[in-house]
Image 1 (tube, rainbow, N blue to C red):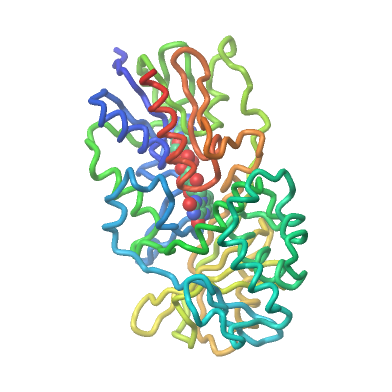
Image 2 (tube, rainbow, N blue to C red; image 1 turned 45 degrees about the horizontal axis):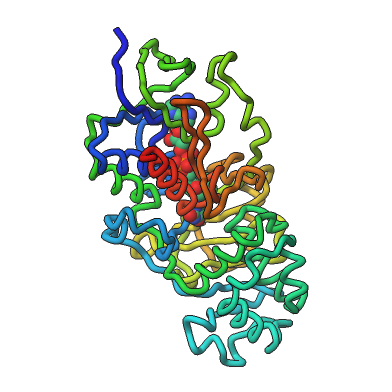
Length: 398
Ligand SMILES: Cc1cc2nc3c(=O)[nH]c(=O)nc-3n(C[C@H](O)[C@H](O)[C@H](O)COP(=O)(O)OP(=O)(O)OC[C@H]3O[C@@H](n4cnc5c(N)ncnc54)[C@H](O)[C@@H]3O)c2cc1C
């Protein structure tokens, strides 16, 4: 016999959890169904040989505006990063501090070969006045060039830093979204939960009724009022909330609009190594503007004398051996480096701006009782996923 629910949410990622929390606040009944064996979706951490490895390097911007609906996140034990980055040029490392958050960032010593005083002045101007430019319809790189930044600053700061955020070398995101993220990185604290990024989802889910989340159930078919799972279960719904655009493929032919057929993604690979401790600075992310393989490296002390090395790459082809060789070329004192694991995520961040409704109505009412929500309809980050869930549930009141 089929079980019936007023509201069924497919997906226990941050979008699904947002919808569940807000329905719960309205005393509405709901059930979350996920094909995975735990909450979080893309926000996941795996324990591998005793090390907590994020399935793709991710950070939390503490000032994301929509985080306020989950105040529990601020209680997580987290490592706060310093605002700035460390970058390499011809075997020399340079620590660059964010002048907006650290006065030392204005010192002439806080520089990199080719960064000019004008670049620093323009950076402060853009931090202070970024809202003024948000409605311009122009590619990000052209905007930065027209703003007056030097070629060296664009390549070694803007591209090198933000390619790791947008997973796109071309910084191919709408200017409005770029300016929003740039402004947050300039002003907000940036942190990573000590036990991994997946803790964010686990922490949110711990405040929901665990009997209302079912795992290891993959939906394979969606009809007008019912869904079918791979293991043969049926559920009836009054309203259905789908949090992944790929779910559209499961909707019966007569209802299917092929609305999301053009969805595209930017991908990434993340490699983890363990090595003996070396003299690095765990408070900063390391950038590699001249590398074709490595976008950034984050180091974390794993024990008294061991270092966990998390390497992100935009190349979907590069091998662990190539990455290891390149790490050793930068950090020659690194001893006993050992590969732990790697994650290839071709569909990491949705990239088709056609679907982005950044800071606007960011969900899709598919028909009378089927809705889609998620970062792909809003903006490709945690804040976007939460925004989409909020907008969807708010629309139900009307
Ligand atoms: C490598 C990487 C790096 C990122 N870096 C950052 C970052 O630094 N900062 C930031 O803010 N954001 C970052 N993001 C983006 C952020 O993680 C996502 O925006 C957010 O997690 C998306 O949440 P979601 O709930 O919309 O989708 P998802 O997390 O994709 O959730 C969808 C859920 O639906 C389930 N599902 C799908 N199909 C079915 C089915 N047929 N049956 C049952 N269940 C199904 C899936 O199992 C999944 O749990 C990154 C993402 C990745 C992958």
